[in-house]
Amino acid sequence: MSPASPKPGILVLRGGAIGDFILTIPVLTALRGRFPHCRLELLGYPHIAQLATELVDRIHPIEARAMTGFFVPDGELNPQLAEIFGGFAIILSYLYDPDGIFQRNVARCSSAQFIVGPHRPDESLGVHATEILLKPLEQLAIYDANPVPEIRVQNPEAFPPASGSSPRNRRVLAVHPGSGGERKNWPESSWMELLKRLLAESDLHFLLVGGEAEGDRLERLAALLPADRLELARSWPLRHLAWRLQSCAGFVGHDSGISHLAAAVGLPGLILWGPTCEAVWRPRNDRMILLRDPQGLDFLPVDRVMQSLSGCVRDMVRRAASARV
Image (tube, rainbow, N blue to C red; front, side):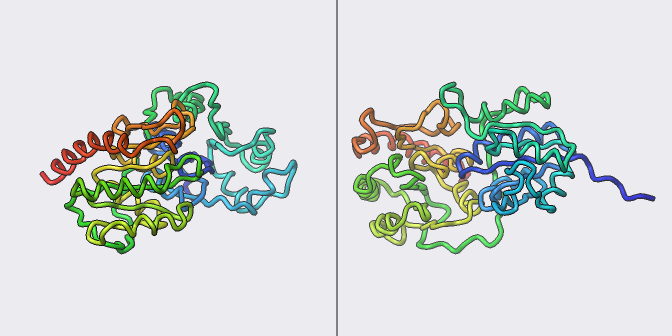
């Protein structure tokens, strides 16, 4: 008797940064809901794609060297990738492939239905990124997918030890004072003043989030906060950070992938918004308030941020109280 054939599979290819990936989560959610008995696998950057662990059956790493031949006309194809592509009935690609070279090379090793998704939404359309990313699923008769990214992480392994102290039963405000571009950032001096005022005017504890993009800024801001009210999340794996954010009461940050992550786990909060197109890129969470200044973030006063945060803090109090019930 010949071995049983593997169940039909769908492969999604998605590169991009943290925010780009999170905005593609509704695609994975819709595919899992529409085809519950199919293999659903993902080819992406593992340190980001780990956020979809609960949605997909397997994550394959995108390695630049292995992918090179697929972007060269009639290129030499990596045999391992060729075998992966050949094992699926449907391939949905969000990779940048303006001339269709990648698609034609995949067709050399796979008979899968190949669906082309947008690498990046066209901002001139004024349509939110999640809706544009979902559009290709209409080829699979998926028309009514939920466009809101939702992430729930179940007990990640080896959660990193806390730096500082922020008990789980206290009201914790997650703070991300950076982003991938300096023009999206509120001045560091304004963050310093905000944290000092929050310390003096509330009993909040703080989860201070950052990585390489924040540089020494994270250390300077952490130095303002007493150890018994601070937990420092520096360069945590994204699943660990998502898990920790789920138990926070609120969030404040910039237009960044971490803000999309906070929104996707359901936090209320405040996003200090810079020059990016709001209609296309804002996090899809009605509990996230966007705050901007017509002249730019350099001109956004701390008083205005504090005033906006007061409403968020009241929401946080209710959230923390309901979590204790």
